Image 1 (tube, rainbow, N blue to C red):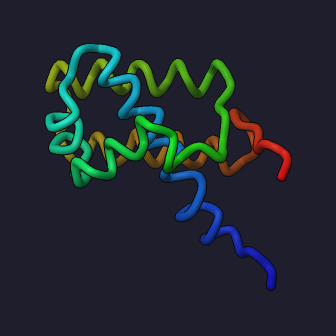
Image 2: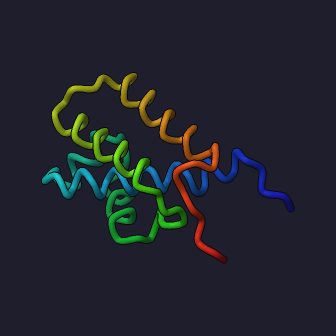
Length: 107
């Protein structure tokens, strides 16, 4: 069966972005509980992202990592509305889907 682009987005790209963002927020000193609230995720999902059980299939290049780091700083500072967060998240996803900014490990 062919894996359609929407499946790749839901199964690989979104979890990878969430994992990178969760890790960056924790590195900035945000608690896992607060990360879960900020990203509207279950605390168990954040734990799985941080432990590498979820969101590990894509490795981002430096440009995407820089955008994720900036987004994490904005989230931590409380500068973003939910709509702004969604828009920035979508911008990252569109960039990755264009095959810019990521590599997929060999299977």
